[in-house]
Image 1 (cartoon, rainbow, N blue to C red):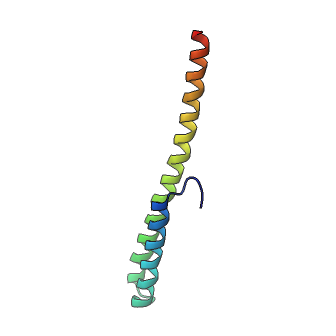
Image 2 (tube, helix red, strand yellow; image 1 turned 30 degrees about the vertical axis):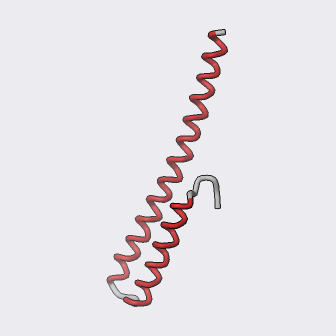
Image 3 (cartoon, helix red, strand yellow; image 1 turned 135 degrees about the horizontal axis):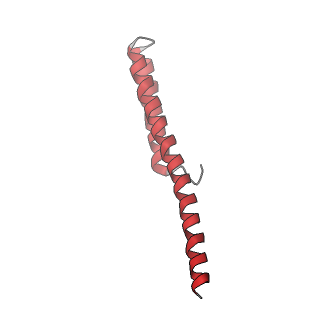
Length: 76
């Protein structure tokens, strides 16, 4: 699926989508559906934030490794 999307994230997406579909068929197109849509959007937002954090963390780790390498070369 991708190197930033974990199995747990994929599981949460599937479960949330299945629960949304069940609520859609059980409740129909009523005002209660807005609550279900909100839960779906919050889950998606949390997963997107997790994805962005992983990307940022990887770039920070890369920069720290470069700094460490430069400091060790300067020491020698």
